[in-house]
Length: 212
Image (cartoon, rainbow, N blue to C red):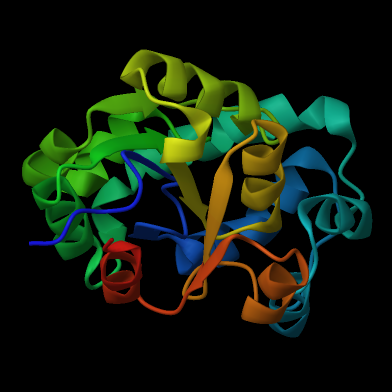
């Protein structure tokens, strides 16, 4: 098996490994009623996938001070329904392939560590060496830096993989290469406009293209 060109790969969770977008779409309007922001139609949810995170917050009318309360509520709701969230097809195989190539795996998420581990399942969870969960909406860059330091690798040896424009922004803020996935929450075109280091079409595409 060929080696990977990166020593450390840090994954986002929701929308990258876990297919939680449909669950989130069901939660958005109950969340809006609870926290007092604008409700949306199914068609508008699709439109929002082409926006970056700050544009989404502006369109929904969500003030920044409410974000920690919304995030806490979402983590609690997801813990109640974790069994309804599945990994994307090919996600476990991707983790196995990278680990088999000697890659150290990390995971940075806004979700809770308990939720992440439950949805991953014991086998996949054991493949990931470094977890940094509970990140704030725009706080992933600091979490990325912590994982890099703990793994004792160089920035140039690290790739961060996510499904949203804020994942690309956070990786760049941390001085790291960024990979965007076309199967997650944000539209492919929205991700491509941010010119990530890599734009992956499928989970299999990740390990295939990163083989040195």
